[in-house]
Every structure is written in structure tokens, then in C-alpha cells.
Image 1 (tube, rainbow, N blue to C red):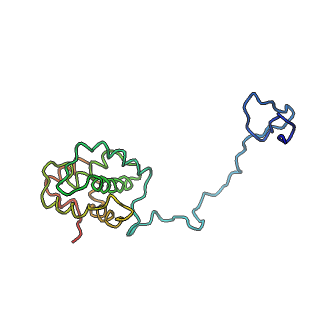
Image 2 (image 1 turned 45 degrees about the vertical axis):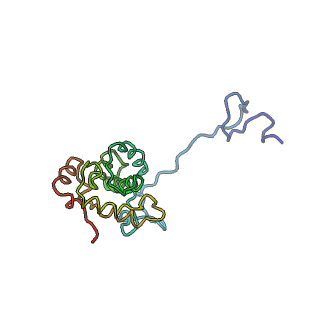
Image 3 (image 1 turned 180 degrees about the horizontal axis):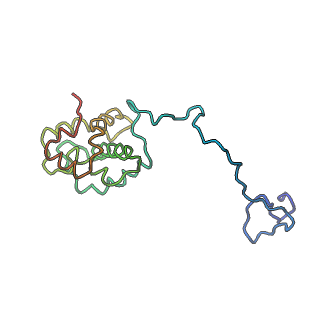
Length: 189
């Protein structure tokens, strides 16, 4: 059975290549905008987020295109200094989560500076990190690369870096880390 309007003739309501014959008498439909609404749009539908993104335990830090941080993290592979007992996957996943939080604070997708800040705060760009920091991060980062099973642990890594630290520029974080790395972190007891 052929299309309505006869075999080989394209319907006016459907797009077709130029070589398909069309009915020259058919009415051509054109796009038409909806009527203008004089009042502004209001978020009043059920389930609509009002008053900003909710914050709290296990909500994370939503933002645009955050997964791009994983691609950027690969550029740091040759520069990371891991201590004995630290897993590369755990370190990258933990610092990527910190970088995602930093990017979301600025309302944008991640950039290389977000990763630089995250790796610097945790001392992974320092060839000789403080042994105390290495011990703290070894404990905190263990298993965070498996977020499905260790999401709470990953959130502890991210939440240990306060917003005030994340709002600093990479050079400021570098200086502060060299002076006193503890001042950049809010470590659990």
C-alpha cells in the first residue's frame, strides 16, 4: 500500500528529498510560532527546582558538562606524584570530583585550572609532599575510584576542600599549599 495521495507522490506534511515528486497543488505548511505570552515564565510546575540547587549530604555539586574533567585529568598523568600505597585511579577520581565541585561553584564546565587546584590542594603536584598530608590522603582516597561502592568516601574527599579554597586561583592555591597545606583543607577529625 503506498502513501496517501498516490504512489510515488510525497505528502506535503512530510519532508522528502528534492528528487521525490510532489503535488504542485498541495498546500505547503510553514513553521508558525506559538502566540506570545505577555507574562514572564514562572517555575510553578510540580517538581520544579525553585530557590537554587538544593545542597546537603550526598547531593554532590551539579554543573554543566562536568564529565569533561575526566578528559582534562589525563593531561596530568605524567605530573602526578603518588605516595606508596596510593592508587592512580583513586587519586584521579577523587581530584576530578573536587574539580567538578570547583567548576560548579563558578557555574561552568571544568577547565584545566580546576584540576590543577584539586591536585595541588591534595599535594599530588608536589614531588615531596608533607608525610602527614600523604598519610591523610592515603586514608581518605582509598577506594574512591569506585564511586558506586564508595560514594560516601568520595564525598568526604570533596567536602574536605572548602568553597573558600576552591574560589582561589591556581597560583594562590600553590602559594598557600607551600606555606601551610592544612589551611586549605577542612579535614574530618
